[in-house]
Length: 381
Image (cartoon, rainbow, N blue to C red; front, side, top):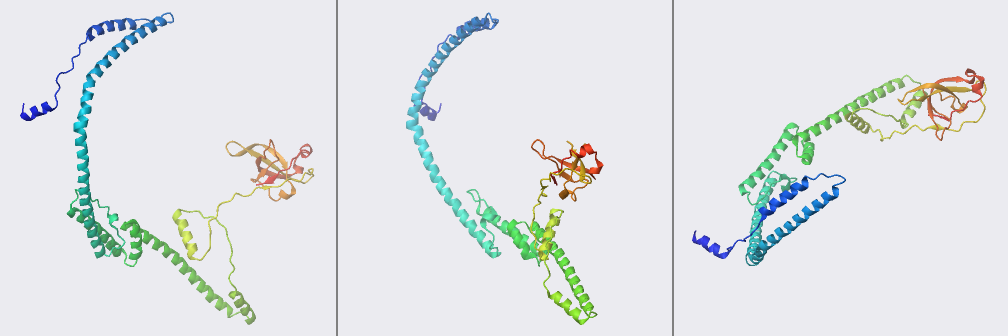
């Protein structure tokens, strides 16, 4: 044993290990026999009380043994816990406090070193940015990680690579289309992706060219119409020619048209662009449900020649079929009914059912007995 180990043993040493005397083997054999007998019992309605008593006896014995075990454990741990409290007070607390103090001082120095590195690399980045006239580029955009292990050369190389990459992107944009380069650079500053910026501007230019071509065709057509009108004026009597000129000077009347357009998203966008370029005012309209025409029918008895409709109700599959029913048509609806038109029938069970017209006739087409009980429709959809 070395002198160093001897000194350590003199500082902390266990004088005597705990001596535990037990007769667990004897207790175990008796307990196992008792448990074996208990498990061999048949549990039934007649024996359940006896089995419960045996089980309670086993649990009582086990609880007593557990109590003895815990007493032994407490007796063994008591001197160690007393020793640990002294050790914590005289030794570990001092070392822990010293370590925390030293760690704080180390972090303070390391933080200062990292801050110094960051200031240096930021200054270098600023030099590159100014040299390349990239006033819209920020150091944070480069996502350069400055930490204690990063070398000054590595940080500067990262700055070089980032600025070099931006310069290459700008050159690619200018080489692609020098005329559109300023517009492409605006897009590039947003996304920092040269290919995306180039494509976005070229697509926009193509769309504008299509609109411009359409406008040019319209201009030519207007010029041709002007020439045609001038030629026609030469053959008109002076009074009529003067009247045509005065009408031409009147401002062109503005009309309003409502329509629905269907197409792809790109097609609809081009349509909107064309309308704006043509000076056409438009707005998005939401589809509105066709209002249901509902009026109270006139309660008048049916007479010969009155209009009637033959209707069928909608089935579960959405189609119409089954038995046909006959209803009287008030005069105000006579012009609106026809095959395939939906009508609103008289109220039934608190609801106004709907049906489709499958035929139109007059009261002359139905028997006199049915004519006397005909009910009128309430409206046309």
